[in-house]
Length: 168
Image (cartoon, rainbow, N blue to C red):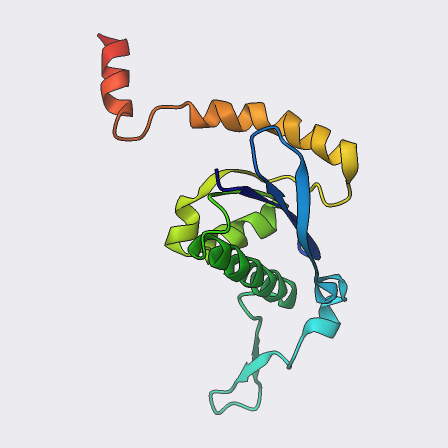
């Protein structure tokens, strides 16, 4: 059986664990630190706000659609996604579990290529990066029943038939 990779992350750090059998021990494979996400927003900004002028003496400032902090989260999510995709493509892992802060989890799911997305067994928008050892395992196991309940829901193509049977 190929191992499952478990990612525990937030915007500033991430840890990758490997579990070779269900309920078995974890082995830490890698850790990432993203100190830029902890910087003040002013320190992350690379340039001034955009300006436009319509021939009038006054000018208008435009606020960027994404903040520097959001850009940094996206960059970090892409870095994690590249590593996870490489593990899936090379056959180092069979499944992925993503536990990350809600903002990073959304970015990470968007950054994952299709092949790696198919390997995601379950995910949870929870920040467990401040925990380690037994406390991390206990909190992870507390999340699993919720994930198992979500996985047992009928597939979308099966749902209408199931609902129709309940209505009749």
